[in-house]
Amino acid sequence: MDIKLELILFQVVNFGVVFGALVYFLYKPVVKLLDERAKKTADAEKAAMETLKEREEAEAIKTKTKSQAEKEAGKLLEKAKEQSVALKKELGAETKAAIQAERAKALKNWEEEKASMIREMQKEFAQGVYSVAEKLLGKAVDKKSHAELIDKSLKELAKAM
Amino acid sequence: MAQTIIVETVIPLSAEQKAVVSALLKSKFGTTSYAEKLNPSILGGVRIMVGSTQYDATLAGKLAQLRSA
View: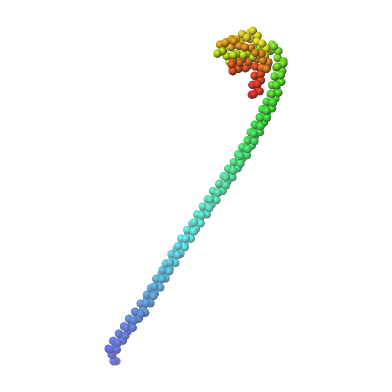
């Protein structure tokens, strides 16, 4: 077998050139591409995980907020009911008080009117009585009675003066 | 200046009544001098007028008081 050293050397150099070209033009870009892709996938996965986490957090906040809102609404409703009952009671009491006040006022007015009428009647009656008394006294009192009246009046004056 | 004192009655005062009036006026006003006046409108009793002040113990006065009450 005839071994040609130049041919072997040529084949080795040729292989090295091809290998180098392949490494430089094919292997490295492909590796780079794969790395980028892997990185993109990892980033996307990370983003997805974060989004999922945020969504879960948002869901938890939503649930918590809803629960709080329901609780608050319940409290407000309860308070409104209590206020409504209190207001109703108060209005009832006020109305009752107003009715009683009106009734008392009407009664008082009526009493005053009645008293006024009675006073008027008494006055009119007394006027009549006094007129009659004046007429009777002017005519009917005799000298003896006049003298007694004078004695009595002098005693009164002695005390009053 | 002495005040004018008038004593009004329906009938004339008796001697005893005059003495009582004199004693009363003496003790209150320091005088026994007064003028008597008959006035049927007082109906009964006595009214003594000392200047512008009058002391009324008449029936007419009492009736007037009752009327105004």
